[in-house]
Image 1 (tube, rainbow, N blue to C red):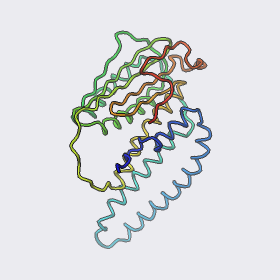
Image 2 (image 1 turned 60 degrees about the horizontal axis):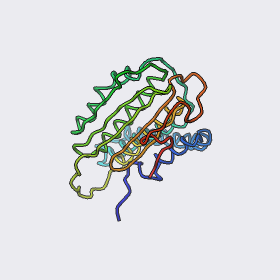
Image 3 (image 1 turned 30 degrees about the vertical axis):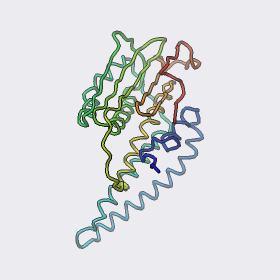
Image 4 (image 1 turned 135 degrees about the vertical axis):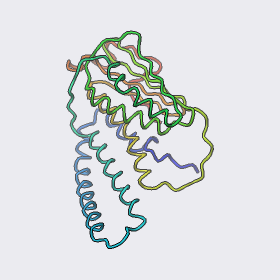
Length: 263
């Protein structure tokens, strides 16, 4: 029996569950459910951190071989809860008015480098013409940084992705399409270290985090997993104005359903 992937991307995984809450507009119930849980986990992490410090301080010889693994696992647990908190907590935007291209140009080489170091290709296709609009450049760039790093970590050798966008109907419309590349040879079954599994789960949360940022911009994100992943998201060019009813001024295309497809 094949095992479910340990990157949180499987239907019913943490990433998919958070994405459903965000898509259904259930941010307040999500916040109420997770804020207390997150606080208790933080208290436990702080106690663990103090225990690690006291143990290391009292040690008279070399630390046990498992010490580095424990330290890495603790760090990844902390990172995981940082991302979960970023998803559910109240988010305020600092809007700037500029073309989407301006933000992409600042991040282009970083994003391509993530792909090239893994033998992958990232193609960026700007529109021939685009108009400026409002968005929080720092939040959106940070969310895309995480999303693109996550996708680069999962594509097979020879794979690639295309990032394209346009402005029409008063909206930014961004599309991400992947080609999976050649099939990787089977790898021997090696137990996944706890910190590596946690790191993969944390990376997968870049998807609901991106969706959260887009929703805060009064937009939506769709997600189609599979051999060749597709993602599509949009938000209005005038974020500071009241959000238009869903579908207003926008003609959905075959690759742009307005709700995430999970499964």
